[in-house]
Length: 115
Image (cartoon, rainbow, N blue to C red):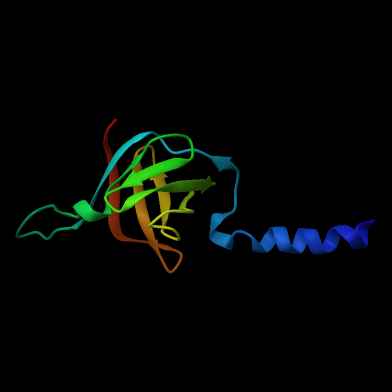
């Protein structure tokens, strides 16, 4: 019996990258406006309208590129289908995300700006 379960456990462990482990959850619904950091001599943030998206339900998102599904595991949000499939974000706080680059929070930040 244990031998039969071992291959299943190995495959299940490979289904999600190490950065996407943790309990399954949801992200607060609403529009997430994204920006890159500005500089001291100019704007605080540089808007990135093509990167924004809206969480429309417990597992679906909409973006300027189209619609898809997402999965939240622990503090990681993964866009799991649709035109932005494979993008992932660190859930920093309620309504605050940072796009992951090589498994680490990158420069792009997305803030929940409305319902």
